[in-house]
Length: 388
Image: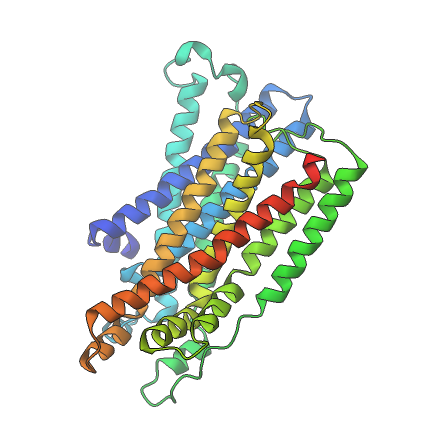
């Protein structure tokens, strides 16, 4: 109930972010229900139904990642001394954030169920002259328990991830103490070597699998023409490696900005990148992985004129790209909110607004210069064994 009252009094932009979470949840719920409809309409094709269900894992992960990012930037769940005085400490606020996330995702799941039942003709007859009847298993009884179970996946997973991410830690409590010592310089994230190792391992597995067998048809939801399991596993490891290396690459970018006699602007930009490496680097790495996969798939299938992308595959890919972009923008907003105090202190010390804006632009250009060519190179290396 408190989560609902907080939602009623929030800023319109915060409500918009929650509605975007609900929309993403509706898209994933619709994909899961379509998988169930295909399984009901094609009882003899269990392997194809499992492949379609596995394809839904990517949009699900992107939606959960976006929901957690929105929960982190929700001002209603930000710890304040006044809220702690009435018993709303960090633990209770984390529970409220999880409840708000569950409400948004549940709303999206309800919309997905209504749209799915409408397209199946269970409410007002088959629309669009029954064009989606075979795809959704129209005319077959829909198992209600299975449908509700699938629709509960997104709210339960997103709310659980939000609760785990926002749970208070002893380090956070010590950092909030006025008597605590000044924070130490940010340590380098440990994911860069692991990310490089995953990229190399994925490319090696993909090259070996591509030499062993030709491309087969392992279609996920909607008819995406995939390759053998080894090629898909190698491609997934390559993308995962780029995502894992994101924080380390961001930290390294901050270090590069401060080399060779840096000025005040470069020092500010580089130190900010080092401090925000984990917060910004993770969504940057995920965005790079999604972009590399998109570039690779487009270059691989676009040249031959084939159209392996079905409607549900297109919906899933659109959900992944939209959620990844929204998560990156939300992380940038969170970084801006956390640096308000530092910005005010610099302005009081005499720093000009133009210098601070130049530092922000310099950080953005540095990240673009590091991640853009790396993403393109990973994409080209990933599809190189498949072109032979």
